[in-house]
Image (tube, rainbow, N blue to C red; front, side, top):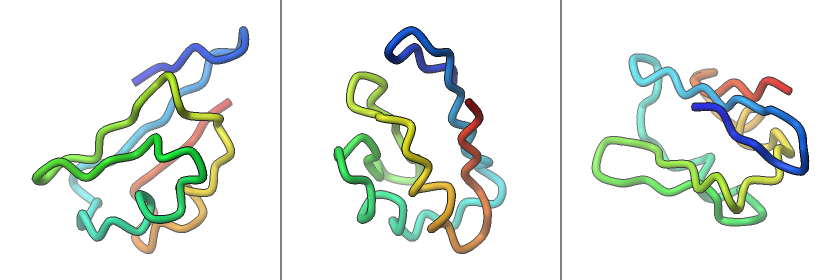
Length: 67
């Protein structure tokens, strides 16, 4: 899902086959841009600041932030 933030094109990819829906990424997001909805991680594009913390904290490597 591509995100347009501060003039930069950013893509946050969540591999739904790898994701265990543990919520670790949701808990560390400084802006609360991630939400666990049933068995999906939702990204609020307007809140994401492309910090990459979710990418680094994911225990199974299911999130990739590409700038």
